[in-house]
Every structure is written in C-alpha cells, then in structure tokens.
Image (cartoon, rainbow, N blue to C red; front, top):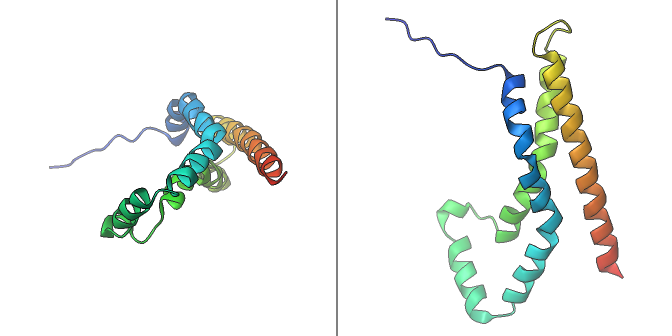
Length: 127
C-alpha cells in the first residue's frame, strides 16, 4: 500500500506565515524592555536562585534566559538565508519563484527595520 503525502509549495507556506510577522515585529520592538525587566528582577536574590535552578535543568541545555529571549531575534535572518538557498535551486520559470522572491524581499525589509530600531535603542542606551 502506498502512502502519498501532499506537501504545499514553499511559497504557499510563506504566504501563510507573512501575515503573522507583526507578532515578531512587536517582539523586536519590545525586546529591550524584557531585558530591562529581567535585569531589575535579577537584583532580587530569590529570583536569581530560582532562575539558576531553572537554567540548570537539562531541558535548557546550559542556555541562559537571555539566550532564550534573544533567540527569536535571529529567526528572520535564518528565514532569509533559507529563502536565498531555495531561490538558488528554484528555476526562474517555476510556479513558486515569485512567492519566494516576495517573501524574501518582505523579510529583508522587516529585518532592516528591526535592525534600525535595535541600533537606535543600543545607541540611546549608551547615552
């Protein structure tokens, strides 16, 4: 007996994904606040002890809470790299090509805006 799996084209998956990118933008916009709140809470010994217990669990694989808070910031660049690789192997006349190009350009715009915001915050926090 054969089992067929229908996989949607990659362009369609990014079509579904792009409208939800606003959540990511909001996360990036507020990322520095989460780090500020974390720094304030780390002043409390009971919080620091609890955090150490949690970070020492095998599930955390030795990563800190900061690394978990920063992880989503790296996803858009990873998606851009993935799309770049997909486009390198997608024929120019392929039905999915335009959707992949659109998704890549949209993610590059979002990444640029996020980087500008992050840079502005970094510079302003130095002053």
